[in-house]
Length: 356
Image 1 (cartoon, rainbow, N blue to C red):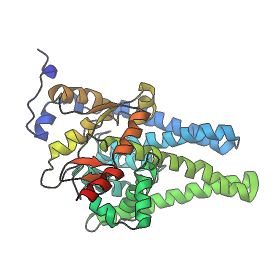
Image 2 (image 1 turned 180 degrees about the vertical axis):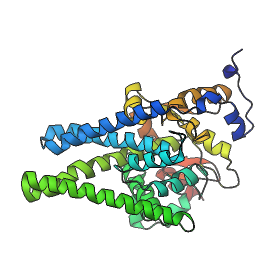
Image 3 (image 1 turned 60 degrees about the horizontal axis):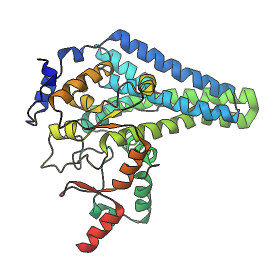
Image 4 (image 1 turned 135 degrees about the vertical axis):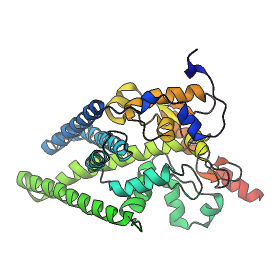
């Protein structure tokens, strides 16, 4: 009998979950990684070239989303390389990660600490995992007026990009300076990326000045660099949100949290249209397997996920890309009651406070 069809007793051991994954799922393929990197680079170069050469409004409306998605595709591959999942060589992985994260202005060394170590190390653990960490009713009630307005924006159906930009990109990466041995590496990466960004901005300014004067010198870097970056932020912010936020996804107080709960019960496998996944997202929405073991290459995640789902059929959460489903989540998930283990809307939080 095929062992993948046998349900595994839930023992809350992440090592046992990893034991259900076939060894073949850990085999890296340099050729597949290179093909994906070339594809992502071409998908980025084409809309960027188009943005440099046109100001036709309807073309911009097509090219901007394509450029933003292309930045996202490069970032996803850079994210995998930062995990060490693309190539055998650690040096090559780090180099690829830095190059792929440059269009999204992400500092790889800081990302490694915040995402790889903290988010993956303490997924959905109260006061540890900062990525989409929910506020409690007590915390929200203590906020001032502006903080409440910000919370309502960031936790709305339109706010994923604003949250990611402020909390992940700015506070936990660019503004953050790690103490100890990581400090030097983060500073060096910030300086290197800042230099690349200045060169890119200067190049687009000069291009605009030579082709249209002062106004073009201002407009070209905005349309080629800034707007695609903001679209990327919205796309990735949304992706991170749907990976870890839903009415049936729990966040855990410290005393109840475990690696099994964080990696197996507090994320999801979302099924996307095949062409969208193939062009830009490289299986990153097969997110349970990725959290179970970040060493699994992107092209092996579906097979690893199938093995995990077969062994733990009642544990793995799955969903499908759906605008209605996303809107339902954003309406239901505003604040969190860690003691009761469930999400609250603003209205239910007010009712609870009135009763108490």
